[in-house]
Image 1 (cartoon, rainbow, N blue to C red):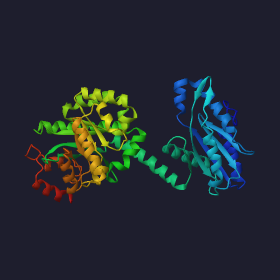
Image 2 (cartoon, rainbow, N blue to C red; image 1 turned 135 degrees about the horizontal axis):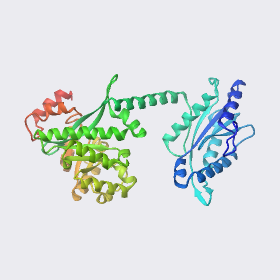
Image 3 (cartoon, helix red, strand yellow; image 1 turned 90 degrees about the vertical axis):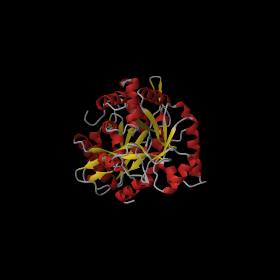
Amino acid sequence: MIFQDALTTLPSRTFLLQKLAEVLQAGESSFAVVYLDCDRFKLVNGSFGYAIGNQLLIAIAERLQHHLRPGDVLARMGEDEFCFLLHQIDGAIALEPFIQAILRGFDTSFVVADCELFMTACIGIALGSSVYQQPEEPLQDADTAMYKAKLRGKGCYQIFDRQMSLAMLNRLTLENDLQRALEHQEFVTYYQPIVNLQTQNVVGFEALVRWQHPDRDMVLPGEFIPCMEETGLIVPVGMLVLKQACQQLRAWHQRGWTQLTMSVNLSVRQFTCPTLLADIDRVLAETAVNPAHLKLEITESAIVDNAQKAIALTEQLRSRQIQISIDDFGTGYSSLGQLHCFPVNNLKIDRSFVNQIQAGNRNYQVVNTIITLSNQLELAVIAEGLETTQQLQCLQQLGCEFGQGYLFSKPLTGAEIERIYLKSDRSGGFNQSAIAILSDFLDL
């Protein structure tokens, strides 16, 4: 019972560890541990039930056994995870045919209880080494490599290297720090001005999250946003940023700057969160902000992945008078002709187009096309990432209405925004003297 898996009759994890211990005691290093995890197996259990799921596991085990050589071991590690212990493996090149054969074995569907099921798997590999002292070590390294393979997508494999352990440790440390940061309220909101490119008046701001780390000072979002997306922390942190931004906008409106708008990003993870509407309604009620001056920015990829759901959700947001912007437009490979299907108010041209824009070049023509179509659809256009006067002049020539970027200002705290922009002129005028003051402030 200890050495055999009850469901598949394969050797158990305990048996595999015992064999690995024997290999290490014998001083053998020409071996490989191949750790396999089925992709999205929980979806099968959730859709068809555990009985079908168990039959599928038995079928997978039977198919994997076809790849066993004499003396090798195939064990079931738990639920949808399996592991090979292969002998006489002289490096990664010698292992390649075996790995490809395993992956091709999943190309054919599994027929279980009259259900045809297609599966894929990810594989992590730890090659034998004299550094291994305990049987758990190569197993853990193969598991780490498998996790890395899963991050790349379905049906991938990865061979372990020593840098992965350090990367995993750093990642775990980052996840723990982010969780602590949320509990200790270390996330703060900065604001970058959005400027009318023709009048150079400030018309609104985009709210951007920053992490006030107790030991590292200010941490920029590029370091921690991807981790928050994967762990799901982006949902509570995103709502925190939305609340802070709405509170700030409400305060500015009460002080007389009633025409200012506030743009807040919604990540893909937030956009698919089932409590999104309820969370937004709660923030609107708590802050008493005017929703007509709130703009929620949704990435192009979020609406392309599930167009019908995206349309329904954006319609519900629009019914609350909230404006909708498509962020990073031009990078999601959607058709420009699909825009009329989505109830949006604004397009934000991705900085990659603005960065290289010159009169007559390809980016110039792309931006011109986006602006022309947007005008026909009565959508406002905001260009991101303006850094030079040449970019500003090109966008002005093309009739782009709004823009933001370091040419005007880096993201600033609410107090800095008030000191530079909102001292006395409630029109938000961005005149030459203001540019001079700002240039000194920003060291541009």
